Image (cartoon, rainbow, N blue to C red; front, side, top):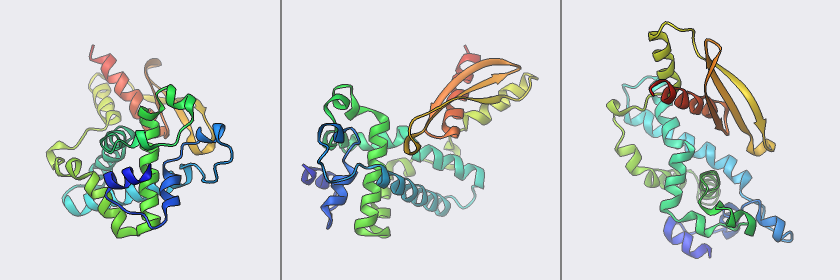
Length: 227
């Protein structure tokens, strides 16, 4: 099974257990408790850092005139869950995941959260198996079109900044972001955040980081204000 994924990835692992680990969803253990390979969560943690560093380094070199804020927004755009899921789908990663039947039947193989997490785990596995240079080469190959198509005039605007500007132009108080709920185990937290303006709730967002949830809430607020 992993042979086919190695071909799509164009990487041959010396330690195949690393790839097996990167492709094992936690739900698999409910049906196969004797499975002796851990799920991808630790590799996901490592891969997230490798991906963030490689993209940050590439943007820093490619756009010498951008300031820290612009570079931060570009990096956030390139490593967000939606982008990771699109890259993962191009690799047909979902079809290679070891996953419990219930999770698979509920659409788990196509779920953005699973795909993005597993892709980060794969990047972490490549880093451990092949080292920095090959993991960097893999990231830049998979993200080639995204990086090539971004120019200084195509910087995605942060929805929080956009909402702030719109609210200020209307003469209202600054948006206030409040944590509504915080759910999930420590390795997979999900935050729900609500944004209010002058005490009125305008939008709610959910994310694995508070910043992602705040941005989601700001996007909903912008959409509601522009209706």
